[in-house]
Length: 63
Image 1 (cartoon, rainbow, N blue to C red):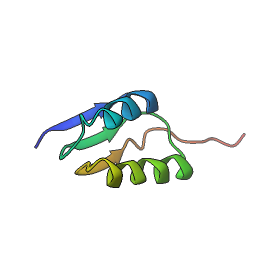
Image 2 (cartoon, rainbow, N blue to C red):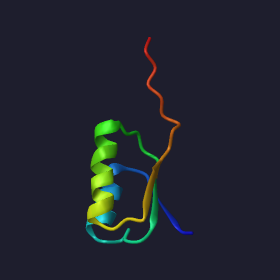
Image 3 (cartoon, helix red, strand yellow):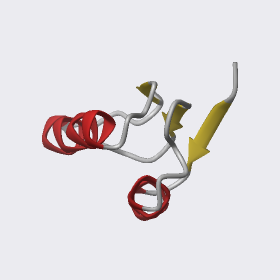
Image 4 (cartoon, rainbow, N blue to C red):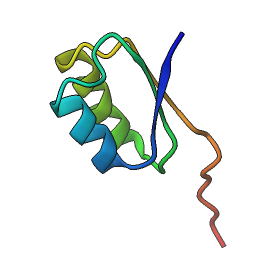
């Protein structure tokens, strides 16, 4: 299995729109919210990305 790591939303968009992610697994390591995840999942379908996963390290802290 080959997984492509995307460090920013811009790198994800650039690689997807240039068809570099077709049939590959992608892992996003940048902060996301539900709206951004939804957009990325639409890109998954549009650009034939095999799977997309997200880092869960980022947490929102209410003070």
